[in-house]
Amino acid sequence: MVAGTAAMYQAMTRLGHAAGSDFTSPPNLSGGKGQSVVILGAGLAGMLAAYELRKAGYKVQILEYQNRSGGRNFTLRGGDRYTELGGGVIDVKFAAGNYVNPGPWRLPYHHHAILHYCREFGVALEPFQQFNMNTWLHSSTTFGGKPQRYRDYMSDFTGYTAELLSKAINQGKLDDPAGKEEREILLEAMRDWGALDRDYRYVKGLHASNRRGFDHEPGGGPDGAPTPSTPFSRDDVMKSGLWAWMAFHMNYEMQPTMFQPVGGMDMIGRGFARQVGDLVTHQAKVSKIAQDDHGVTVSWTDMAHGGATRTTKADFCVCTIPLSILTQMEVEVSDAMLAAIAAVPYASSVKLGLEFKRRFWEEDEAIYGGISFTDQGISQISYPSHGYFSKGPAVLLGGYMFGPAAYDFAGMTPEERVKHGLQQGAALHPQYLKEFSNGVGWAWSRVPWIEGCCGTWSEQARRDHYKTLTTMDRRIVLAGEHASYVGCWQEGALLSSISAVEQLHKRAQGAG
Image (cartoon, rainbow, N blue to C red; front, side, top):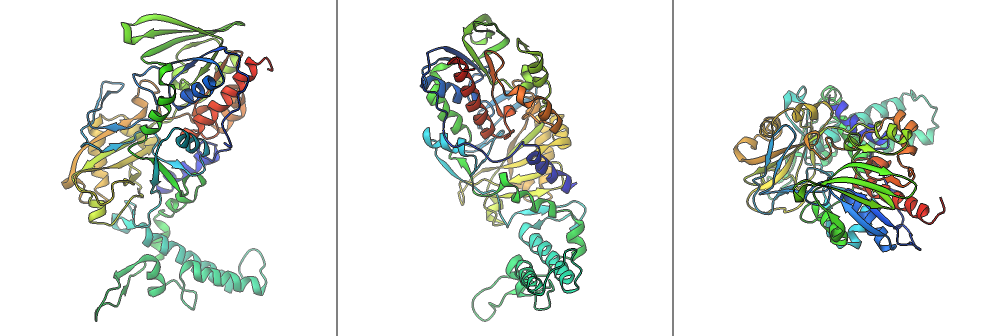
């Protein structure tokens, strides 16, 4: 089960849902002729399109369903209150200054577009601690159900693997023939990599403990000598399946360095909104998108003014509405585009934000940021990468779920999600129940303006529909993370937006 959960992230990478970015510079839209553009959605893709198009001389208006801008880029803080589909109420009671990001929560170093615009819009960033050797790995079925330090387990796994490879090298049992010099190099590499002794064994001793830590740490005075720790048995290490999580941090999109906005992820949305906020009409519920050879007509309900029916006409339209919602609307595009819109289901995802009375993970366990992993439904626990050593209550990410576990948790009430998250998290942290203050359980499949987390392309759907979805249909062009090969990330939303405005500009200039 552990391996299966980790494999989900691997699959996202293979299917083009989580990768690096080809961004090099903002779009060059010189020579704009002042045509009008209506943009549907004030998420990052929509606001970036508005920003770049206005700079180029276009007349821009944004229609946004919510009463705020930012889309999935937002942050939950004390005093926030949301009603989800089904009537469940998310009532956030965090202390002042505490928050959780229910949507995006980290920025890889190679997501060049989002980092570029954060610099341009003055959004302060700080390091996000993704990888921490002192966090926990937990399997319910091995090691007596007790969590083990990432450091200990990784040391033992690499040590035993290096020992096995050394034996194969010494016995000449490698599939590929190796010369004497190459064998010597390989053996030396295995000794260093695996912390093996002179006989190429991974055993209790200073070599192993310099990787996994000591039972008695080095000290001063007469009793300062360290006591080496005892490695786990090779059988337990291999059968646990915890090795699957070691690959998590090796994935390109999960490698350090990562960043986060200072003060919460919505600082990015606010930074974008400062550039184009005057263009946004909030509480505009779009119901129909029509087009002809002369322009686009958008029908929408003005929820801020008694539900009045309104229409907006423009020369072109950039539509960033999630496909999960767009499939429920009347959209005048080609049959091929309609098929493409319907071809991308949205994943279910759940996040738990748990506030505790103190930072027990720091005070009791010396965990400063990073992620612990478990084979339970909550999948992982992420510790805050800000406010180290501070006193008083703090919030950690108490669960981040995709797949079957996300559907299970989404079927619960918000209160039940928190309750189950506490019960499962207590397997890693016995302090949970004593130190708990309050929490929230956010289920993306129950959010009315998206009904899911993000678009999940299959390989077949990409082959059949991706080009159609991302190519301008007469006067309408789509943007959003679903229109990229960096799906489920903010970077994909920005890259798709750049492609969309470039296509629109080319069409407006009469070149396509």
